Length: 163
Image (cartoon, rainbow, N blue to C red; front, side, top):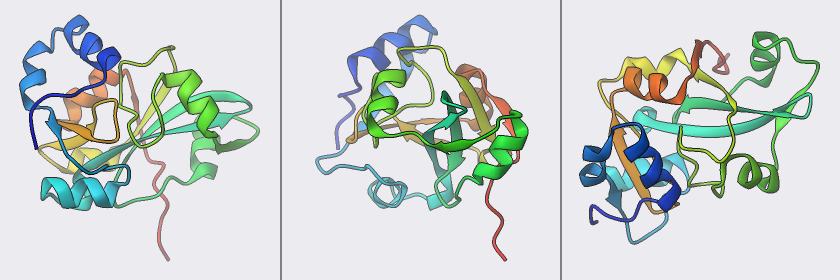
């Protein structure tokens, strides 16, 4: 693991947001950390400390949902939250077109286009969460409240409830 390797677009976004010091905290892993479980194992943290950046299509319009790694997004709750007719998982092409990143490396901010962002309140249960830094091999730590602020996210409850 080294401290370099953020996607150039994400590195530029950090600088633009005045977060240049974060470059030194980015961790790069030799093996992909595409899934939350892979990332948690590589970092040595709880699965719920991983912040997944998931793109959905709400009536065809992309929306980003930030969710802890141990939970699943309830698309019906997302649909109700944003008053959409239909919400589905976006395909890989839409994810790349919207964010500029491939699935497995989508960071919570620093995207190609401005997108509505929802953050599940469950992320706030931790002092620090880890999110992708633009590639499937890189992650960065950040306080969840700060991450939500930089993402321009609205705090919501969209976690799937287990029976």
